[in-house]
Length: 466
RNA sequence: GGCGCGGUACCCAAGUGGCUAAGGGAGAGGUCUGCAAAACCUCGAUUCGUCGGUUCGAAUCCGACCCGCGCCUCCA
Image 1 (cartoon, chains in turn blue, cyan):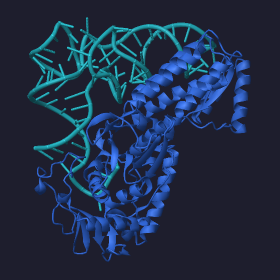
Image 2 (image 1 turned 120 degrees about the vertical axis):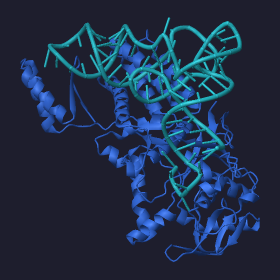
Image 3 (image 1 turned 90 degrees about the vertical axis):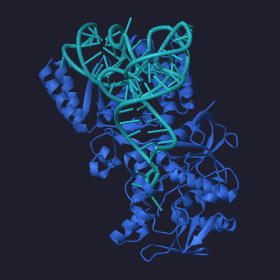
Image 4 (image 1 turned 180 degrees about the vertical axis):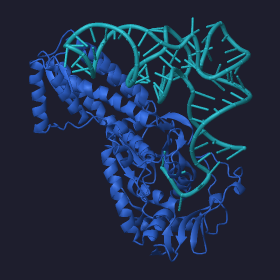
């Protein structure tokens, strides 16, 4: 049984999709005003693992991730650069897709953009007005939260206890209640606007997620994810406007990913601890190691990013890769070893791995299962008890789990340049002649180039070090 | 102030009433090796932020306190 922690009631509860076997998943995507940072990717990687796990468990998943391509920040930056909003966001949308590919994040089924769903939003706002949940003031339209008694049920915020004085309302529009939020913003000269039946202007932020999620997933769907910072006000507002609109329960399971901090502090540009993906990968780090690091802390726990932790993730990953390397390249006896029950070891691992992830995505338990299997199998390898077919079973078990983890490098059939191959041959000859000085020199030389040479009983082997 | 997360070995991190407190990384010693590397073996928390309490028994439950972090600003 799969269980998730549901923000709406603060409990871990069994997961039952609305339609058995099918999961409708909505995850809050990027606002494309800048390059996504590693904190954003923590959320996306978590959501990716969630989706991969559901797929692994046999669910058919429909995944929608929005792209916010119109908001205060995108408008402001586009104006500063004196280019159109579309021109401005294009660059960051492309970067986003490049980055998620590098992190081996599966693409969603739909990536709806706010600017391409204005009619849907307008339609929703119209209904909200008709139903009396929204009012117009000076050309803008607001959602009136006092009309929605459940307001605050997700974030557990008691509006009367909020200290209005402590908060500087940055919104320059006039609202009846400070917590009412804009569904539609009146046109301004400096801003792009759309001429619609509810007036000329642009949508507020929250409405896009409701309009687009309902369009692609229906008025009620299974899972909605995002970062914890979205709980209030964004998701709270989504619930209010969606349920006021449809009269139905909007989302059954709310899963929120906690933040990533760097060196114990919140990332911020002024502190100089703010990283986008490129910053990390430019330092010769492996994207798979970063993915593993982002993945390996439970999603409801703050992840403290450090370069030391990244090195540790790299080392862990190396252990898995070395294990596969052994299985791939050693010479094993033909057939199965009837005395070692490799299937049993694999089954135990699979079971523990799945049980771990089923328990609100307990990745630590899952990874433990993986490493325990590696340990057991390595012992068998070292005592010569693994045969050819056993090795193949192990590899296939690992590949199967990697459908969820997505951290193993694709088999690339990497080929070394002929120059390097010559060097390796040269070193082999030197070793034969017991000219170890030369052999070691060549080994060091190649190591400088990131190529690690290992002499084994089965002969020389090489690895590319990240 | 409100809401929430967390404090377990040198680092990361499971475990939420009872077998020897997972796993990974780093480290020390050993096996193998020309030497390395990888792999294997051995070692490593009488102890789980602090102080009380409940219990036959607590990292795990209760109370108080200390510390770190996040959200409450259109930040994932």
